[in-house]
Length: 283
Length: 273
Image (cartoon, rainbow over all chains, first blue to last red; front, side, top):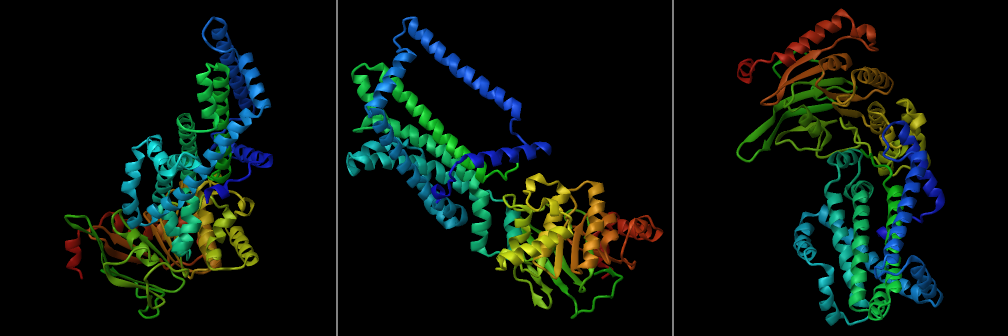
């Protein structure tokens, strides 16, 4: 459900959002960084990254057992050319996306049901509270025994990780819908189904998106750990193999790939959030 | 009603009729009587304001009329039929504006029209008419977060008017606004009301506002919530600044003020029944 509403994040949308912010600036309500400040912020970000790489290089040169940035870059190039990196990345990405999509697709309706019907809440809540205290990774041994060693157990644990975070925030969103808005819809003639579709769903979207972002983070974390334990391919497996051969550059390539992919996915969701919940008043 | 000075609304022809309505809230150990056998008739196209100290049950009365709450005993009738829930013939304007923040001004105004399954073109035309009525044409595509408090309430008024209710129930609609904006909106509301007549029940805690707007001011008292006094304002519309500064206005205002702020206790009141 949520996944299908994720907008394509194209350039024009980005610019629309920016002008929205400018308008809000005039009324003094905006939290957005103004034009020149933004450029400076980006410059500082870049400077910080460069300094970090320089420090890393310095440490490597000073005799620590670290590969230098050029070594890592070279290894990345090699892995990219022979297709290893693309294969591993694709395998990991597909697992995360499948688990995450399934998790949110189940979490959102369940969260709505819990928020809307007390009976559903009381039936589902103990299970969610229980499974929430178990790290999804701890389910992996059981999942492997029951579901086999192929993709299914890995996708299942990622599903759990995404589901548990998203279901709770969806539920929170529904419960905290402003009573006055529901009353306003009722006095305008809306029935229960209409109130749900036209008030509860949009009003809880911000909560759902926050849940999705957190869920994506924990999916990604769970995935890599799952791949370290049991996988035929994927970024985690790549690093696991590299460890056996003391291949530090490859481990670095894997880490950087994981970080960059996580960041990219988070940015995508952030864009979706800006577009879908730009109506919110922020203090 | 104790010191009823009005005989205007005839029972049977009343647009709104509140009959012996009692509302109690269960507070666990004890019950709180928000309304105690309240009876009130409002005539068609009448503008009634309800004023009283906090806790006198004025908002509860409005929620019962809106169909958002049920009375413990007694009943509220609209056009002779018992109120059992909200209905499109009763528009409600809330103090907190209650605009849908994810919808533009126009979409907010169209909300009730979409509920009524009106066609897109018709919806748009109607919405634009009422947006113009409240002077928000320029902001039709703006989101509520871009609007000031006064503009938000004007949008809420347009939204209530759009579904064409014969009754407007307003719960301290200008209570959260600054004094200047409030006076402006009062004038605009009267202007709108004189052009598009509706039966209005307007809750407020502001005595000046109550007298300035109304055909009739209902004064309520607290613990238990009840009608304490009803004051007729037999002065013609349109009302302007001149009226606000007039001797008659001052006299009525003093009378209502005394009713609100120098209420005698319920026991003393009962002996007068």
